[in-house]
Amino acid sequence: MTDRLAPLHSDDADARNDAIRDLAREASPELLDELQKLLSDPAASHYARQAAAETLGQIGPPDGAAILYGLLEDDDATHRELAAIGLGRAPSAETVQRLIAALSDKVNTVRNVAERSLLAMEEELAAHGVEPLLELLEHPVPLSRSPAARLLGITQDERALEPLLNHLQNDRQWLARMWAAKGLGDLGKIEAAQPLAHAMQHDEKNRVRAASAEALGKLRPDNAEQLLRTALETDDDGGVRKIAGEALYSLGFESPEYHPDDPFDE
Image (tube, rainbow, N blue to C red; front, side, top):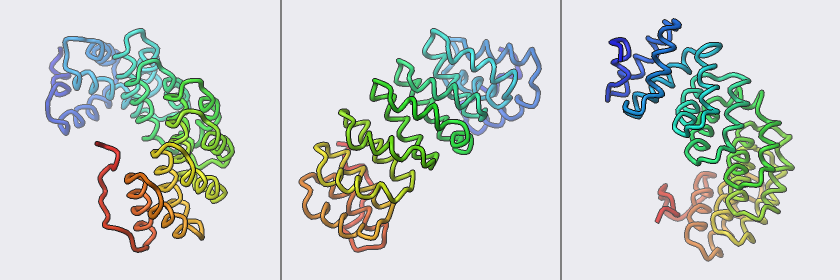
């Protein structure tokens, strides 16, 4: 380890972030090589390796991002995970495409960090990610369809409306239906209100009903109070009732005592 990379090993997150910014201004070939070696060093701490990845992302295209693009396709899942984290600092059209491709990675951690990085670049995602996300929404694995649904909602692109409604109403996997409901809430299209109301009242899975109630609170249809009160009073699941109550509270209506805790975390 060279002295200039020593701050990346600090257990102080602020010190590491300062070092990432300082090192990114240098961006020499020698530094790029040192950063790649640190990222790939299994003897180094995870946060030092992550800081190296984030420095490469901060350096950005062409050289820093190119190293991360290569590692995103590495056989080593830890390398792919670190690359996905680092690319969160390198928003671009190509980064969006590559991170969306990583949402179908066979390793859950890689998918999760790729999604997190995409959530950090909403503008680029909306500009360059809708079509590949629509393709991913039809992936056979629900753990890949689900982040596609969530991210499509973030884009607020009207092209996502019908595909998300289709998955809310017809997907056989509850996880994908749940994220379709959440995506529709973020998408902000009032046309989704009636299908969400139906899902809130009739879906067999409590998480889908709860997500639909939350989405209705975001969409604010004219009959939102009536719909949410009905769920609050009639749903046999306490978690669903709690989310419906919180949605009512967010709309300014009287509701049972508000508790922000996750009702499903037990």
